[in-house]
Length: 471
Image 1 (tube, one colour):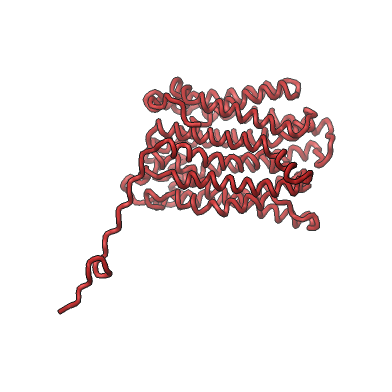
Image 2: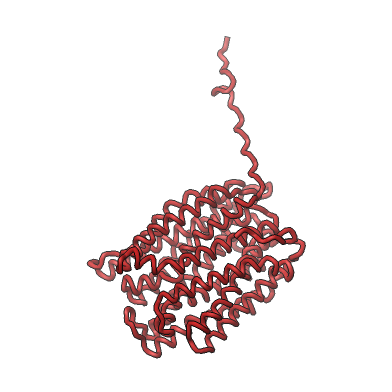
């Protein structure tokens, strides 16, 4: 008589329990998704507005070295971001982006702290520069991993256009609140924590920031779900990278949106990177004024996000995107033509923030729509990971290219780091980098790159979104 294994043991394997279907998208998930971009924008705002200032005024690095550091760090992201996108595309449906988001939070928090810790003054300038470059490069890689996974979730949480617009609006509201908070509290908190030493203050402040950002990202990783079957019954993407890039290049809407985002990010990098210098050396105000101007811009961006939804319903996402981008550039051009001062310049910067806030939610909604309906030749959702990764890479490349170009402009104009007074030539260069260059880039993005962007049918797509999104 042969021995027979009892049911449930090694002789008879039970089928794995089915994975329960995620619940419908609710208010908690929408808010949690917005919390994630709040965390990312806290770090992005710090890098955009205070990284160059930290390196030149706190670490006392020459501006030429800072420009090289920014460019060298981005070289790592040129490989990391597309690799992350391909990895996501080749993951099974339902487990494409969330595992990577959850695994990357802790390393990201550590590198946030290390990037803003000044190295000992006893080290040589070269050694400190290399150490700072390695830390910033690590932060760029970690940011690319978790941010790419988060961005892909815009396409994976739901395929419903109305809910995507709600998610994009929540995301932009969260991002704006993060930028507002960091613009108001950064320098006062640094001085308070450091008791007059900004070196110590930055280190302590960034430790607290890392904990807050980690908690916000955990909310997205915990409460968001993947519902869209990205492969639609097909196997995960195994096509050569060249073929996938060719598919995306043929997607006209994705190509135009990515190009416009690159130009506007380049312009924003000039504007926010030169803001502290312009306030201090051109307007003649305390550097705290830069924080208040950033806060005012963030408030107006928040207001713009709130009115973006009804405008998209009335005029269409593509038309709102084009008009808002052109208006933002026109406002900056007017500001450059007027005498510099906190009053006039600040008021026009508020209008600029309103225009940017109107554009932000519709931009991400349009991007997800292009990936859904770009056609088989454009890759569609089959290349959703690579599509979002390359879009993110373009934006971050614009950030570091802009930072390097701004550093080169300031160096060419004779900016003296650590000095309380700058020459007239240096002030002219600062003011042009602050307003004129961003104005031209925004006008190019809205008036040229987005000119042929197809019009999405707004009323049918977002008719269920008449109520305001969660703030």
